[in-house]
Image (cartoon, rainbow, N blue to C red; front, side):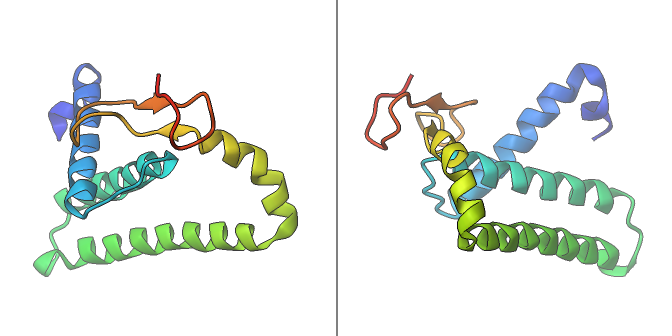
Length: 133
């Protein structure tokens, strides 16, 4: 962890964290084929990375404080989902978000086997069957 905190190795650390999150989601059977592929991995990377760092300084019995920390991070993520659900149910907000959501809907995950690369691809036509650049 100390090595990856150094500026010279920060990119390698970020890649390792991203690959870990990707492999976890892949093992769980994730089939996202849009921007959610990225948001799931980014969210898990944040939760996983912060929890590992917390755990490194935790001297509580059975890492009890780390488990509590993880529970709080999961609760934070669930709050994001609640806000998204409320926004979808609000006609005004849903209307304002239709443009940005259409833009985000064109983002695709990387091609190839799981963990094949980053950052992915972009579809110029906004349908799921379009060509990828």
